[in-house]
Image 1 (cartoon, rainbow, N blue to C red):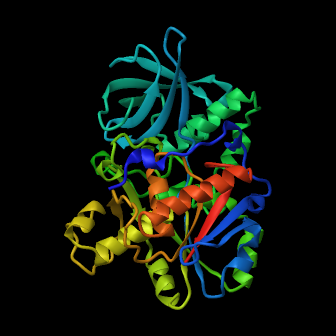
Image 2: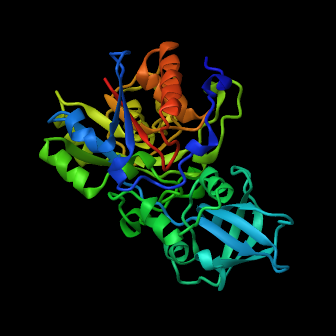
Image 3: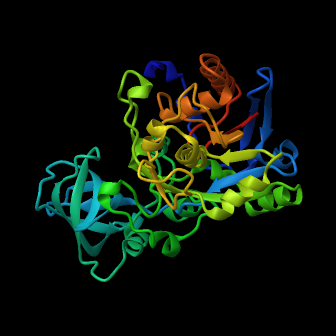
Length: 396
């Protein structure tokens, strides 16, 4: 068992990145190896073609991030901030922050960063108990428009709260138009095809992401072309990042944390690419990609308990799932089946993502010890942390 407080570390606030590296692949890259504890290199993401081998397979999460952050006003003029989470049969589920929220209240949505009245309102229906601050709302004044269309017109980029706070503390200028592009991977597949996958509320899913798969933000078209020229192949998965990505671990023991469900998919083309990668390494770009691949591996190869955690109990063994609703929690000691390496950002303290990365580095207790040593080295070297920060590559 892993105590949650073991995932704590000290981070100076000035190392929280509020803007991404420019160009994208100029971000710093710490290189580690599971089999060689002495290896610790300071490189940049642009060096990846020299760090990977011909025949390696990079796998990316191509989920699209919707402008899910909402700003509204109560009839009295009070400000309400919100985050679109998913649809339900009568409208949306949103996480709302503001005083005096009650059923029947109308919140007038502003038009993006301008705050100009849009004519679209949210009517609060009832609390949504499965989301902190969650409400089921009816959307008024947007009849005939799809949810992605409304969000594109009225929403703001759903940057994590710690970036917004750090920007306020530093009196930084905010340009939502720039953020929309910078908080989206260059491989993201936009709405229509993705949004066609409508998911019921009780399934816990969605049709796009409300947070970015941040490891993929480091890749620009030029780097992708150089990797292809070096013989490194590319494949795609989809995991729609949900509101659970913002939830801290509240249990004292990590294994007792209740993971949120997220919808994920590994296309048949990616399955074929992994089969052709025998002899090469499968490198997950980001924890969402790793979770997707290992969820499919669990569905096909895991025991009954593991299959239940990835939503595969009702599937016949050996049948390739179309979509999975996964609650897979990866902690030290986890048996990795399909991922040979991981490229990831530097994560928040006391998070499930830290536990996952520790499991990739080594068996317990060495994995967590090595990870925290690497984080201390990153702090000493001035690495930038979190969603817009630098990256770490863990090779076999």
